[in-house]
Length: 360
Ligand code: FCA
Image (tube, rainbow, N blue to C red):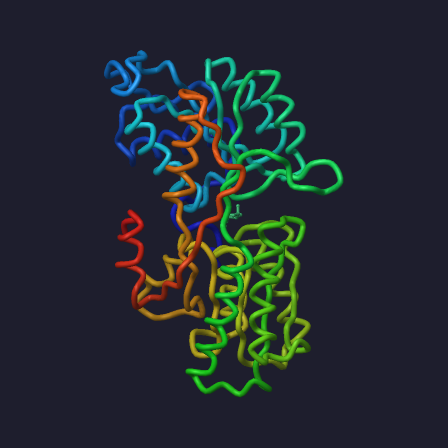
């Protein structure tokens, strides 16, 4: 069964595969870019001077580091960051940083290329202090996106951050699951909730806690909510966690599925298909409007019923834009920006995604 990312079916490693990946991504995007020997990709702007400042184009170079470059969410963040680079005529260096070692060496790499700052979705929030220390040593500004750095004492670090309104969006998942269950006339006593969790990551725990809170507030019995802890925040992580829940609760015939992102829910939906449970038995709602959308395109519905569409445009374009203005004009970005989500299903995803600048 194929449970990996539908768009880019590669195992990410920073060497050859990274180059292959970025090369194909660049070919897809068809812009004026080059792949650096380190496997990063650079959007260059050789076309002269920045309209606003008169400074030579190429004076400003910014990085965009992501933890899971193979996933559509992060590819879309890069796509919109590229649009900011084109608009403001700075160079953008995109680097996949799936672990701490890669993230830290990528920062040195950026400094060596003469960059002034970077946006990062860190592979591990506990790396925050090490990343900030290295960035300071290299004189680079840092803007965090999606996953927030955790510093000493488990507290969020005081670094500019853009993330989703995790608890609110989670609550909306819970409400939408209940609404769909009622619409189908399912008897609560026959239904279980399969909650895929990744609690070590704040934004993930807030999302799943929010969903569970809304379900219980709406009258769903706590005792029928079964959590499965994911080892990784991707589709295989959801698949494995759901299989354990399914083994423990083989008597449940109808499922509501929630998780931190599309990948978590999609993994669970695939696991349920493996147990003979399909669209009529499963209501899964993801968060992202990314990987899960592939299921909407299938001729027959699957258990992946919906997703909370969040905004890679804001997380890619606006983060990079704010960082650019910080570097160029000294305009400090706000410390916190939280973005919203909206439910998409196979009935409306095309128009909703189009409005967000996402093709389908
Ligand atoms: C986290 C998740 C991603 C996406 C992002 C907004 O980084 O891992 O899938 O949901 O938050």
